[in-house]
Image (cartoon, rainbow, N blue to C red; front, side):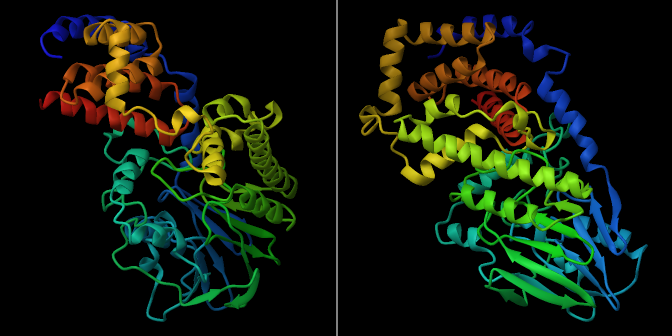
Length: 457
């Protein structure tokens, strides 16, 4: 796969000059993502007489509850820089000391700026007793690949002009290279107080607070309920997007049924304000109830429909065409696939309950990729013919098929630059059409890596 491909490569590049890659007009997905950036404008929003939410300083909100002789902070952002700026904004409202910090869960984008909020008097730091459970799943396995995939998902290696936002957060570049479980805080802050009961009632600085244990995006999640102010902090069990039921960086199974139960429990609290784990608050009792109820119903529908298809003998590839949200839910803005993706959730449910085997006996011991590729090339009439098919598929607008054909070519020759460049262009086309920001970032980052690899050969 050397000289015979050169002319074909130039032909392909010429064809691509008039393809959708060079189109100046945004796709619907790109337009929606650009409009979504309004959710991440930097602001401090007063949602109750003593509750303020800082949005847009980092990738997740940090909230301040003002008590009699101090304040309580709910979540502390992704790093010290964003946390310090949020704290400075809060200090324009009150200079009362921080008496308490509450972590809704242990993901780094919610906890890594905690040091910025700690003064001379150490605050109470509250979390569930299994805080950090997801990170511990990987800690002994030396899963460095998750950081590589996490950086692709986050778009951390992309130049700013290739990033719009991350679907539920602005495009942000962590100071420590996009590590999955660490947002870059200079000093890790551990909980000083934990609880194991379903609901823990506490009081800090004269403020009555309920901490409610709920599984969902993580198994160490909780939501915060202020009964007197009717304000609810959901953590990442609600934000304005279809939920990230499976993160393509790689995660343990996220319990979809428990996630729906969490939203059901939150919907029953009677909140007048909902502060999501990402995106701006929702204000109004009816609006909060509707959002949480729709979220619950959508998650339950996808789970139930997936199980229904599984029991019909469907494989994951069949299920993703079978499970579609009803229009009345799919059209809700807070259920659009800005961050999570329904198809990924379906695949995760299958794998979570049945594991890797899809039920088709042909897949018990499939051919190795190189052997399958060799036979595919033979069917196509040789490797040069297979390359032509990949180029033609891309020219015809069938970027997915083009990318898959390139995978066969690369299985036969990992050093070949031509399939790398064609696949990179195919992934770029796919990215432009994808609303889900994490997948879009992954496509574009991988394409960037392929082009760099081809250039260096």
